[in-house]
Image (cartoon, rainbow, N blue to C red; front, side, top):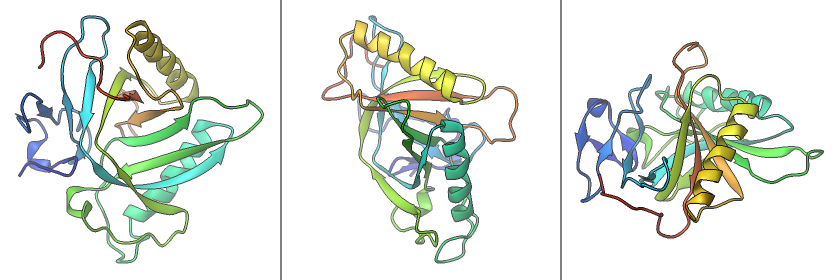
Length: 219
């Protein structure tokens, strides 16, 4: 098996294969990690540049942080989750890093109130069914259901300003195409180590509601 519960395994870092027709799964987003989330581009759309993408159900380890700034929340959340995969768990085991790192951000808020961000690491395939419990009470497991998402990519560092900018650009494309999606939050997804300076890859995701808007030929 190349894929298990939403995770692409190491031996499939650059392969293409059919999971269930007419979808096609690919692992080309595994940039610096051995394992990454499994996804399928389900079709092309002539109305806008962002095709809907299918993600399998998957298990993540997560933490929530209240902050006025995404950068501070991301730093605090990443630190807690990194400690978990480096042994701050009930079994004391080291767990491989995966990608992407997800940051869930509520869409609407009062500017004078802090936001609750949820930062998540995808658990490797070996831990999808059973993972050691966190020793930090702020860290918990998150079961992500299968979903369709609209995704827009961008480079550089994932900061509040550019993440918000690309979420606006994505929402404009979706609104122009009359696509239905959850407007209460969006995800920022990062695929690189904090030590990587050049050729960084990031994304913003909006989650589709109902059947994703799709036209043109299926891939």
